[in-house]
Length: 355
Ligand SMILES: C[S@@+](CC[C@H](N)C(=O)[O-])C[C@H]1O[C@@H](n2cnc3c(N)ncnc32)[C@H](O)[C@@H]1O
Image 1 (cartoon, rainbow, N blue to C red):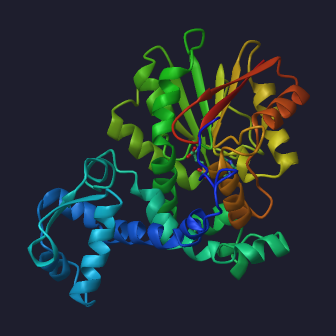
Image 2: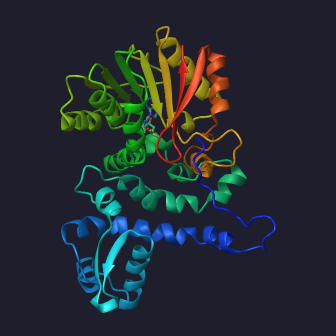
Image 3: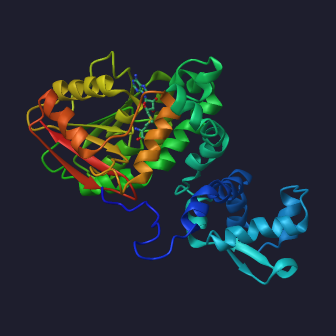
């Protein structure tokens, strides 16, 4: 939870500098360059066709901008380290960097661009209304236009549902892989991932812990998607997908219950209600695991976690991200005996409560 996601302002004793102010202030330029490349599927194309010229890219994507602007776009991606380039301008040949070839080629199972697609298609616009969110305390997404609450609004449309599920997988798959290996599952046999989306956490646990049997639970429209992932991983003997509402329905029995990016969707009362439900369903010695961008207790280091919390303002109005000491307080309140934390990838952690 000490992951550094801050920029360094001027150090005391040195003259003031506008550099970090301008870097953050223009930050959306950089993100929009990357997100546009993802939405164009530039990296997927360059994974198949290595060493393309700007003209070949221009023709393929039917771009009507000047050549100069196309070079600016592509060379910004070179500057960020997302593309490699040989030659310059008209003689330049572009190819993917190792990172973009691995993680942003849609044809590879390691693709994580679902979240970036959603950042471009939904959140980029909604974050334009951050000030409205702060001033009103109301969500700034589809709900603002009178649609149903976020999950209902997304899940009424199969294309948006698939996009959201892919975004969740892209965001969390590294954490799921890390948790499946770092958490001590040796004393346990059964695992439930509540709000498990495509079922990837259950699949990672089953893959890395051959003694575990896993259940992924989510709202009914998500079950067929999870079923599809389970078949793809050929793990239907030890992973099953079930439909349910984690507020209304009983949890299937399990020794370990997890919730990835679930608690942050809700206000404090609902968070405690979910923790209480998990506590009641677990056997003595059982564990509850939340996987989120848990904010450092000093609220200085994990800026990503604090911005994720603002993203919950945009998406839900009253959901928020939290610190380990918040988690510890809620877990103790519902009866858990002890808590611990494991750092996962980047700004994310698993926080664990033992019954
Ligand atoms: C932010 S996503 C997190 C998905 C996944 N656990 C992860 O870590 O990426 C929240 C998930 O909770 C599910 N969900 C929301 N309300 C639910 C409810 N009442 N019962 C069951 N699942 C619910 C959503 O369908 C969605 O898959």
